Length: 277
Length: 277
Image (cartoon, rainbow over all chains, first blue to last red; front, side, top):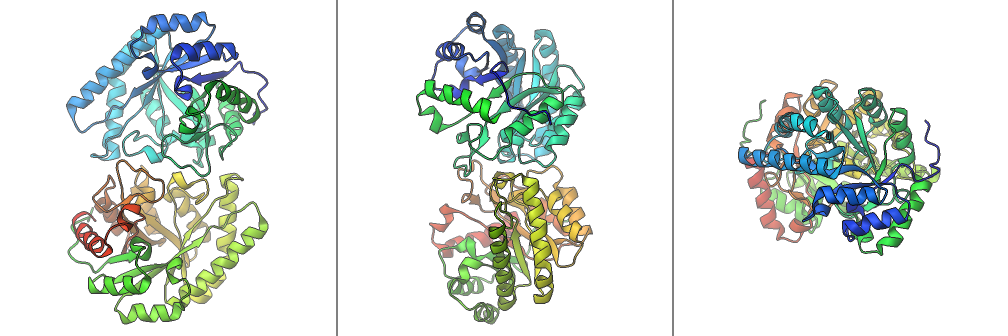
């Protein structure tokens, strides 16, 4: 395992949702001031803004745009809703292209009114339908497997093995996988599946945070790296061994941290990033 | 799939925890009055009671004792704690024997301060150490894989594949698996792993409830069958095809239902058991 201590912030990226109380303009300014070199942009953060101008602003501040977050949510028992979801994903791809984001993260989705396998089939159909536009806009698609506690409504893809299966089914340079330690840390096959993901050139993104013990909320109780039980550094080692050289994206949903002063939270992120990632 | 509608209550079993507000004496009386033929007893429900006399009382009311719940929780970074856990499990086995329970359900446990694989090794060691007493007391051990959202502190065994691996490692008539739909419904390999479990004579127990959408609490927001997204009847079909002829154990942790009148809750359980299990 090549998981030595990180020496600098050159691979650090932060998701706008992590510092949700900040408008994106503030986030860009503050990340830049703190030497954070990259940002992943949530679509909510773009609300009412011209993505092209926001992209220019981000680059002018010296930051790279790593990804637009998030597309997906393909499945539904309603054909009309599936069509709407596809149109929404097309808008997201155009937005990513305008923003200058080379990647769109897909939260696959699930509809609890139908079997998971039906949802997975609809996810495959959604990605297939989206693929030509991904190629045309030059924006890659990353399937993000989500923790099984989100299997009801957020994702019928719950392990890296399933996401790998799906990416390999497409065998396209435009479709890959986002590996998020929060969703996958518990999986005994994780090391092997990360290697497989890299071997197929499907490892498109790497998200980090921690699993708090105890976790008190299913959605918004994620921890800072080092605060919980996820061996983030070890998993980073597996990801690097698999050939990944991209950014380490800090994606934390936390009512607790959103209630804090965001400047000091940003400094905490930098500190634990070096200590525990 | 032989998952036809259930016609009677002959395979219905209820866990004492499901009607937690009732003392066990009341639970036994009420289950019997409602024609529920079997009970699984949580150790907490025995508090301060002689298990032998409680067992006699249960049988006198015409109920079968399906299992004592729960042993396990083997792993710890502390050798002293592991030793304590083993002693506690030995007490549980003696309690099960006195009660007349043919099965002890094991929640495997996990310690977030060590890698899951270390916890799994300690679980294997714990079961190995317990096995002679299980044979001596005539009480079988059921490894219960828990949902990955409990991987931090409750179980380093999170899929049926892992539980099957462990049971097959022992290859003993005294070690098998408890299949709980709440923990396993999301797994795309579930049907196959249930068949494998049965083929190795390891399918010792079957627990039912439902996954509410949305689920608002990690512990105590389980639903009644039919109230959520788990295909309980389909899974029962797989379990029956695997050769299982035991009880369907209703195990619901729910702040919501515990706050209700338990008599009407018990009638609801019977109603949805026929409609959705």
